Image (cartoon, rainbow, N blue to C red):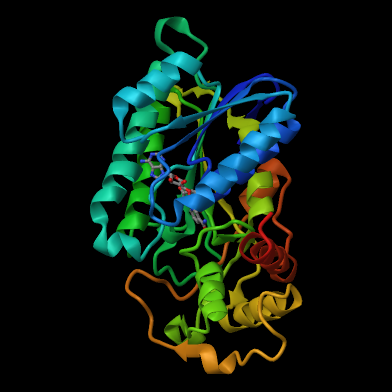
Length: 364
Ligand SMILES: NC(=O)c1ccc[n+]([C@@H]2O[C@H](COP(=O)([O-])OP(=O)(O)OC[C@H]3O[C@@H](n4cnc5c(N)ncnc54)[C@H](O)[C@@H]3O)[C@@H](O)[C@H]2O)c1
């Protein structure tokens, strides 16, 4: 698909869900590279996991902003609050919007469905409405809306690797259903109001200062406390793990190329809409991933060399909402943006383990 190049320098970029895990890493890269302009982080700092981690990431952003040529603002609030979203758009008039704010997690959606509807459906709708009205009265408005979807939209699909051409009409969790809904809503808004939008289906993202609800992080915390770790589906799981730097590189490249606008034969817009997978492309067996994590934790000095890992592993059945395999076909991203994730789990988990050691054992 033809892309409209966007120069990010001197732009106003709104990143919702920063200082969340991926959002904070994206904002740090932007502040490092932009030659001017403003980055706005917008997050409600909820306590789904320890908010101290979000404050820590925000402190890194503020430190980086102090030496950046671009400015940084932080707005604390919910994208579910329409008046606030409209106010942020009116005040800052973002050129590019990256919507990463969402209630993440598959298992949590089973006991806490309300927050998924509020953040992922109502919140995303508020962002779309604000993008739509950004063009009012001939204003230049939003040049590109990039938003997080998820590999979970593939549900229990058996055909691998997962391709964006595959049918994704059978989500197996509310979380997945909200992410698929985002893609549908974005398509309708792109068609109706010519909003250039790109959805990115992220595949299991990990890295330093990541999310404590994700396996590598929670397993590390349990092992450090000497508690057993549960290995779901008796270890018969494969995940396409993606290191956060690869995700950030992919998001940045996508931000710089918006789907081109064109009119169809009926004179109405052909929706400037696209969806891509971003995944490592080499699914790892869960047991191999755990082995690599253990080695990294020992090398980093988080766990002693003689730690009895086998005594701390519990093989358990599959959890509701989980899927046995994820495997990204990221060829679309490679063809349209010339990028393919390349950081392997040995390197990525080592970086996580080193960060974990510094953050929890040797805080400055
Ligand atoms: N990490 C992954 O493996 C992964 C995989 C697929 C998709 N995603 C998606 O990527 C995005 C970022 O994920 P992450 O891993 O950085 O998660 P994260 O939880 O660290 O970041 C999300 C941020 O959004 C904020 N937030 C939640 N609801 C909000 C609301 N209503 N208003 C404002 N802020 C709100 C949270 O406080 C959090 O800081 C999410 O949309 C997630 O669904 C992540």
